[in-house]
Image 1: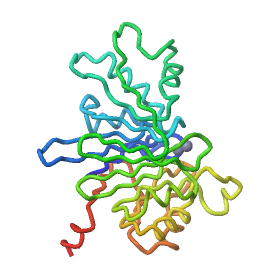
Image 2 (image 1 turned 45 degrees about the horizontal axis):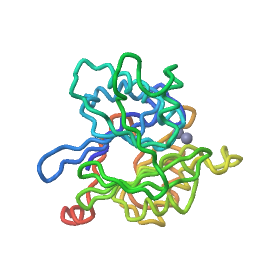
Image 3 (image 1 turned 135 degrees about the vertical axis):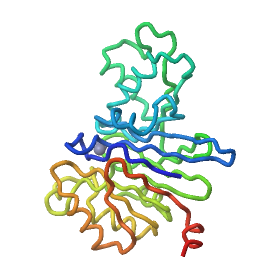
Image 4 (image 1 turned 90 degrees about the vertical axis):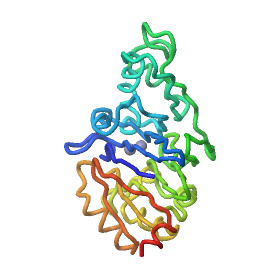
Length: 268
Ligand SMILES: [Zn+2]
Ligand SMILES: [Zn+2]
């Protein structure tokens, strides 16, 4: 399993990165490559096209309905609905239930079907806490996390490897359950200690992300969702104070390998 970082800027698109979006790929035993796009925040639909033809996506999963995680679904919808190819079929989008209304609102439409298009380009499937579903060889589990709106984190497994994504969240029990023993834990660290202490129930800091990684035994911690006004070295240093395992700060176009523990052990 591989995770391509399409955009990782926290809260809004920054000068060097689009907002949150990650492409997850896994090749199954028959050599079929499965591709799931996780979040499609503001500015991310552009750089996505440098990595993949969006027509090749198998599914989209959206963690929550803040613009920095879903807004560019509007671009994807125009792409999918009006594409000159006629064989695109219907793209499954797993997201909080209000997503189709939000997209229609942004696009100024009544209903979910674009003008002049006979069928909806997307098949929306509402997320809920504890839901499990699969996209090809990828098994996906959702947990509701702690954020001011309905929000989910994901735990994705394939071939014995586990990838966990915090979505946007503050510290909560569900986050630990998502992360436990993950081979790669992609975790937001949108706040920093001290400066953002007056906000609760919104975001993690580098320290809180590091503490989750330390107590859940993740193999690799990757920090993300740093807003443009924050020096990424600060949350990185916070995490390193409390977690001794490998920690990286993701950058746009990074490709993260999610290998299982058995493979890692064999390499040593
Ligand atoms: Zn966000
Ligand atoms: Zn958010």
